[in-house]
Length: 401
Image 1 (cartoon, rainbow, N blue to C red):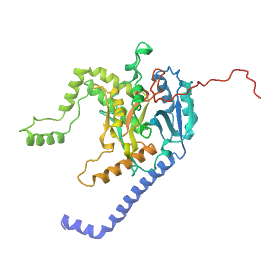
Image 2 (image 1 turned 45 degrees about the vertical axis):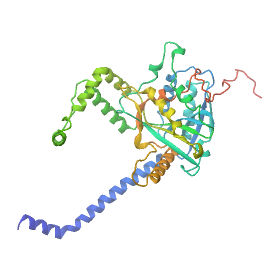
Image 3 (image 1 turned 90 degrees about the horizontal axis):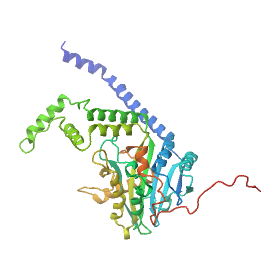
Image 4 (image 1 turned 180 degrees about the horizontal axis):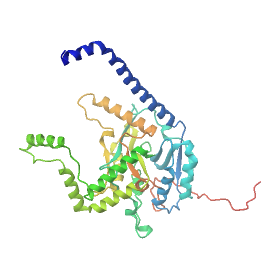
């Protein structure tokens, strides 16, 4: 009996064994999906609260104080926290949205570093907006902000902006606050910075990625290329060699190393990467969006908000950039208007839920404190809301009736 005949006989007599194997595979996949869904429902926060934070005119603390606040918030185990700057009704408001069970934690962390703050619970500003946008009366434009390079590379942080004297120190929030000065009363500009402590598996990936980058920068490890990479490169070069110079695996890494060595020594870059890896970090989603009635809708109103992130960019390390994949723009040959409306609707719902993006980036305490902190007293934007009085403890021995 030939091997082919044997296989044919075996398949004819025992073909039915394939059915339980397939069904078993389907069952285990469904069970895995259900477990993941149950875990997500268990971790989902049902009760949220919004806190408005007002600073009086005596705030002197640098962003270092906000770094300590964030270090305390890194202890949350459920849900996420949204740090927000909202330009609405001609004023700028600092909002923190968090699970209600962490209200005491959030307030205590802010009061510990900023005793002069006035913190009160307010309604979510989304409650005054339509449940679904865009509609016939309102339109919006929005985007997520990502990083130009890998997560381990840091951005320019607040120590860079600090001078030897207070008057020489630049508060990076000043440009953000001023950007809302020209808004009309019905226009709104919102910046959401949604943070969630890094999960263990993401942290491990971050550490591994950063470690590999450091080794490459220090010349301790060459980039690894497989035989298949060389084969693909050979045929690619064969096709385009007439018009383009051949490129081989590893060329890009060499160019990057050369660029780093000419602009900033590899050891210094490695030192900056290592410093970021040593800090507590958050999975971070940054959303910026603008909405207004259609009669006064002007997308250019969002430009100053996007420009705010330019000051933290550096060619040697990392830079913020608009994530075009997560923006409310669509390029399509067919049904472009319908696709655009659907993309805007999805973006708006993600913003309402303060959802973590699939394209979330990793920022450490220092980076987050740089882009979001309580503005110091020298920032006097016309739209900035401040508490007019300072909170204080009652005198010792005050009679109680």
